Image 1 (tube, one colour):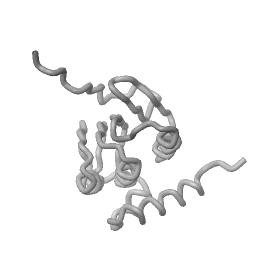
Image 2 (image 1 turned 180 degrees about the vertical axis):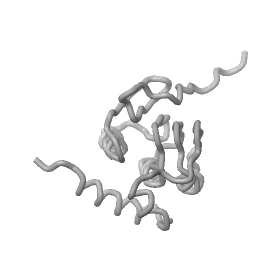
Image 3 (image 1 turned 30 degrees about the vertical axis):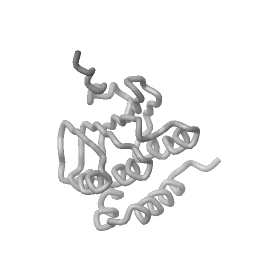
Length: 139
């Protein structure tokens, strides 16, 4: 008897979802937020004990910034509808196994352009974290 293939969810995320995270075929996190907010929300989930290396991330659009965050979080598997070519070197450098439906030259986002020359993971993360903190609504 052959082993069962690993679970592979559909690339499509039902609207209005922008991201889903799976462990062993079960949805453990979903988000409707945009930009990098869902990935920063995952930091809390992983801080509570979820092992990111055992997860599968399904994303709607993955640009260079998202690739840096996926690598920082320790996620090893990614499925995305749209993948920026600028994200591919980051994913490959961090040995993240990925698949996509469509590859584009770049995501039309200021963050993508601003990160295009950054190579260092920690520099990228610090810059993104600072930008995210500035973007968060403050009560």
